Image 1 (cartoon, rainbow, N blue to C red):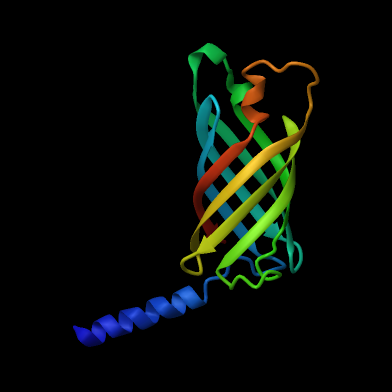
Image 2 (cartoon, rainbow, N blue to C red):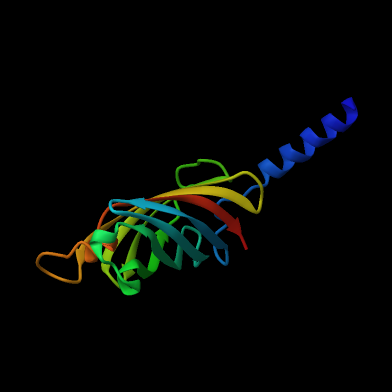
Length: 164
């Protein structure tokens, strides 16, 4: 029993040591999680692909599931799709191989904005992420309806990230 426990500890230690939050060129990440915002909660998925040592590009989409009925949001109001650019800075700040922070820009169907996220990998293939997103410029000027505000506000997302 004691030898089995020692072997398990060593295996887990090696897997934690080899966890890579961002590996550079050709690195691929898939994220899925929940997003939290005013007047609704939903699901978010993202895919990032490494283009260089410290930057990646990708796509993100979110769909607001729980929207208050008084807002009157239809399918088009609830969904958003964004192209994104990340500056992966975990290695720049020497945070360790299993941690990454990534500020970035996103160009979506509803707005132009930015995000700041972090990833922590427990193993080489699985980790957690947290990300905050905010719009910089909305595509519609003037007063937005409550449904139009769904994707034009501060959003916090949290979930799982996978190496592909």
